[in-house]
Amino acid sequence: MDRDALAAFLLRRRAALQPADVGLSAGPRRRTAGLRREEVAQLAAMSTDYYTRMEQRRGPQPSTQMLASVARALRLTADERDYLYRVAGHDAPDRAARTDHIAPGLLRVLDRLTDTPALILSALGETLVQNGPARALFGDTSRLTGFERSNIYRWFLYPDQERKRYPAHDHDRQSRAQVASLRVAYGRLGAESRAGELVRELSRRSPEFARLWDEHEVRRRFDDHKVLVHPELGEIEVDCQALFTEDESQVLLVLTAAPRTEAASKLDLLAVLGTQRLVAEG
Image (cartoon, rainbow, N blue to C red; front, top):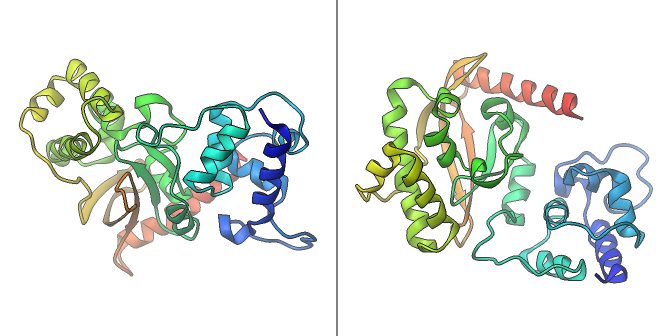
């Protein structure tokens, strides 16, 4: 672990960012350029003291989980993320195997989406980050770990929880779409990848998945139009826009509704609910 290099790198990357770059308000009486330490800590979901000790060459060696959170908070590129891991005394993640480093370009778009549900998913349906309205609509699934972070995994193994967000008449179609989208990832990443591991786990534990997997359907699951069910607001008709990274390893989903419709009013309420829950969590 090169404490000097780690501290210098964090300091320079923090100074290079403005609050607007990460979706924060500058607020009054900001005397120095760049983000404050407490803002980086907030974005990384860690204590300000822990982050401060890294910049001050103190404290224990940060874990890879902590480094991943810091890389996301500082909007690091893949090369910058790898450097961060190495100066902290860890091997850089295998880019083919790891899917949790979010593309900075997608994050910049997400930072500007505050009034409608938006979230970034991996190729395996893992929720990497959500905005407030998306948390209000789907619950906070970005904090889950392992395969439970994948909505494909949860769809087949925890149907009572996961499928309540969709009308009952749409469950069969959604099941087929989930499997077909995993087939896309499996074909791109290979049998020995995490996609292959997920397929083997679901095939072993879910007869429904195993049956659908044998049909070899291949397509992305993001429909242009869908109906979602919120526990308080009821059914919401939304249009779904998908923005993929160049390598198609991640996708930004944005849910909108036609102006001046009941669904648009419900999405406005979701934005309020999301803000209230963020305040409560803070």
